[in-house]
Picture 1 (cartoon, helix red, strand yellow):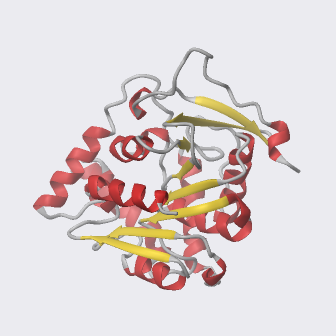
Picture 2: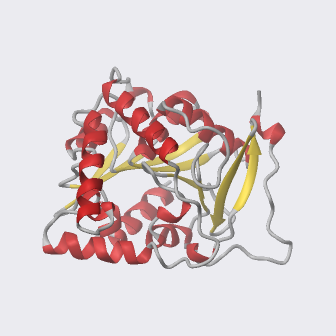
Picture 3: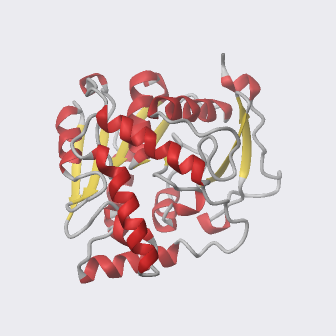
Length: 296
């Protein structure tokens, strides 16, 4: 079934230009296969759109505005809540494959037949699955803080997430400070700056993920970590792989492994950086991502 036949995206008013900054982007909805997806859309309307696929427990407000705004300065950027997450309806899938099918339904609901994908962490797993199952839909991919199916250490995400969340509660700290950043002075500072940026949007903020949806996502990532490795050599699209050199959630060697197994890839590893390396080094990452997306 073609999801776009059931699409009802809410268009911006005729006299309203796209938002200039992510913190001001209007939250819209698009219907596909019985699900109403919440999304935000900004940047120029020329060229191939970049669809952002987000991480475990994340909603629209968890994207670093410096990364979104940086890429949206030159490219159309679309962020969205996957099924059952944040303001999107439906039940959250417990497999990456189902999440990928939902993401494809959303993309087609917007009437798009060719996109670039930026998948961070769990989103990078979803992006790989889309490239394998719907290759005609994908022009280029950026895979950040992520790893391949069956990647070493990915099955431990649940344990690490639970332990760091507990420690964050005991120390009155946001868990992302521990999960995304190193405990060095530079890492701690980068984490504080990142968390402050996430609060820049003050109106029309998204709903937090529900415990049920969070547990479904954890189950999906655990299954991905136990899955038989996929043949990534069939992904012929250009891919930019990026991560910090000290990622505890999806160990950094998975990024090296991804780049090695993808036929047309380049790798960027940021020093003294964890899972959120692209947020810590947002200026360098945005510049590299834009150059990659613009390459003939």
